[in-house]
Length: 301
Image (cartoon, rainbow, N blue to C red; front, side, top):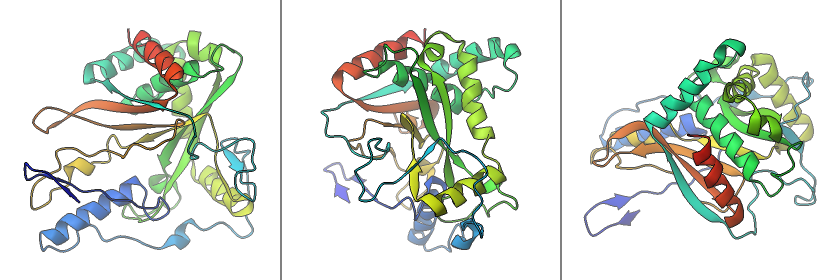
């Protein structure tokens, strides 16, 4: 807890992703608020981790290019994962996408969706496609238009399993979806094509695919692997939790020293009322940040 002279305070919480994913952490906060109100738990957590155990014997039925096997001792792998902190000096910036910006991106995708009927034009998909394009083209190797860029992003598997997990499942019930494309296509191709590839990454996450990922992990003990990961706090609702002292004025992640994780979190209006915009937290070396900022605004036009 950090108290301020204005009588406000900040509450910081650290947790392991193996204990809580975003949705189950939201349930934890709902229960914390209920207890501070002297009320029963708002959500009864389902803690049965056996629901996500590997099959016996494990059956890996897909190739899983989005995963990489860990080398022991850790750190010997020439392809570090997106979760490793960098020793580089990083510049930090928050890019704001207003509701108008997001609607314009949706409109751009919908205008050409006839040729790409599998594109699911949602706020998350268009924002993620836009970020993918910007991050890939801002890399030091960005001039190599034949280079393949792989974006990773989390998918909640609770409703995708058969039978579905309980909505109140407490633990890590997200897996990593991916999309891969050459930088040339990201730079020159129609925006709706990128949205379609992001959509396909999520659609790929069926019950069998998720079970195959779990079995892969049982056999190889690996990590998600790609160029970068988009981690979204955008609609988890942490700022909607009603404590006895009111709702939070703001809720966001603590900045950390990783250039390959881009964070999405809600935009907050003056007065503390959320709107439908989103903030994009980016950490990059200064030369890459300049490129990112340039293409970010270029592709919004």
